[in-house]
Amino acid sequence: MDNNFITFTIGKKKNIALIAHDGKKKELIDWCEQNRDILKNHSLCGTGTSARLVAEKTGLPVKGYNSGPLGGDQQIGAKIVEGVIDFVVFFSDPLEAQPHDPDVKALLRIAQVYDIPIANNRATADFMIRSPLMGMEYEHKVINFRQNVIDRVKDMK
Image 1 (cartoon, rainbow, N blue to C red):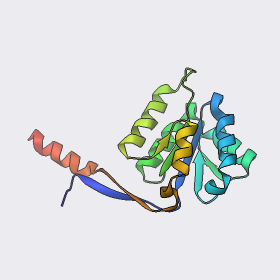
Image 2 (image 1 turned 30 degrees about the horizontal axis):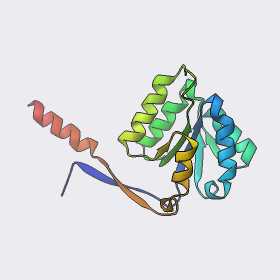
Image 3 (image 1 turned 120 degrees about the vertical axis):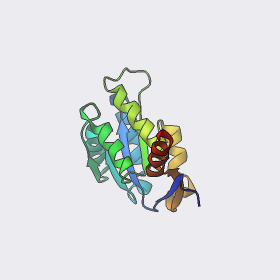
Image 4 (image 1 turned 90 degrees about the horizontal axis):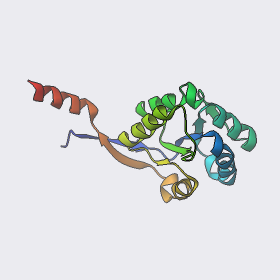
């Protein structure tokens, strides 16, 4: 038995976070509208304005967290750690400096650490949402952080 990893299951119904920088919000709304029939079968959340605009423009229910610069990216990251968010669509704007860039990088890092699918642009989001895995359970292995800490403490002695 390998104690270094834990298997997590992403259910058939995904918990999807929707995030977009200001210059990409219209693109996210358009994408959500085009994929409305798929998204309506999943639980949606997002950072402040992105969540509000997607809900208003598409009619999809979207739970809103704080705006990104006010901690929303960190809230989404915390929900990934808690196992609440399974999937992230984050249309980031690579051509515009973001005052909360460290928060964005922390969110991307935590999604990577917890092996969470994340799309940073429309093409990736299209591939992900049209994957056969969207309608299935998916098991993935994540580092067993508890065991990792135990092993590191042993190595210190």
